[in-house]
Image (tube, rainbow, N blue to C red; front, top):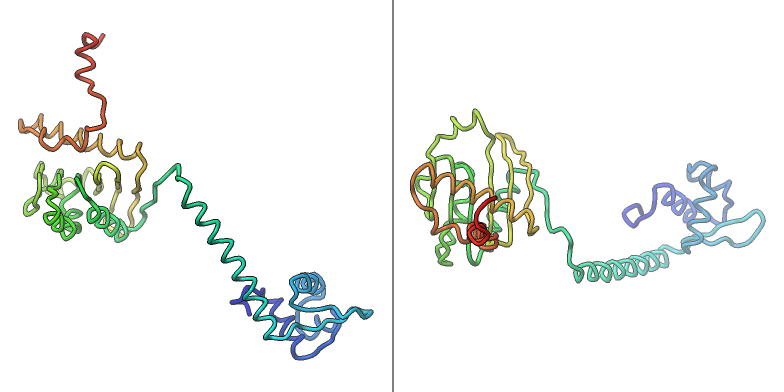
Length: 262
């Protein structure tokens, strides 16, 4: 009966009543093993729900609802609550969420979510990650060619064998691991982001979602990494910066208009 929402003591009371009725609360406590201090409160609760009936004698004696009638009552009650839940859930879906961000705490789930975001891309994919993380995402990245999407990949580690606009410092992972933990950053179509720190175990710590502030944060970090890479290597990154800076203020133009920094 507990799977139907009855407590353990309510189940004991009903099963005891089915085997012998009418009985008093005192007798029920003895027969069911439910403490007398609890039995009367439970009887009142079950009577209010229509599961048992007080036949009105003194002392009060109780009889159970038949199993078939009880099953029908429980089903009706469940269906009513289910309909209420569906209406409430539908109402929530119609209201825009103020925060659309979800946590990442498991390494496998992080890669699964990242792959799903990449698979859903329609315009652009920008990723900053280590080589080992990008290898986990390589099957999803390979599917982008069919959509004519060329991903932008930045890494401090080597990017040999990856297709796309690749920018790398070619530092081996075992060297970097002495200084930094593994990290994974994604921006998809400029409308979704994922940022996560990863370790050697199964754990991860990060977020993914559609929050505009966090998307801008990840885009700014990627834009900064690419800009510094360009300055250090003397190679241009202008052809890939569009998805990362399209919504940023034109600071250089504004400064020129204002006559420079005061």
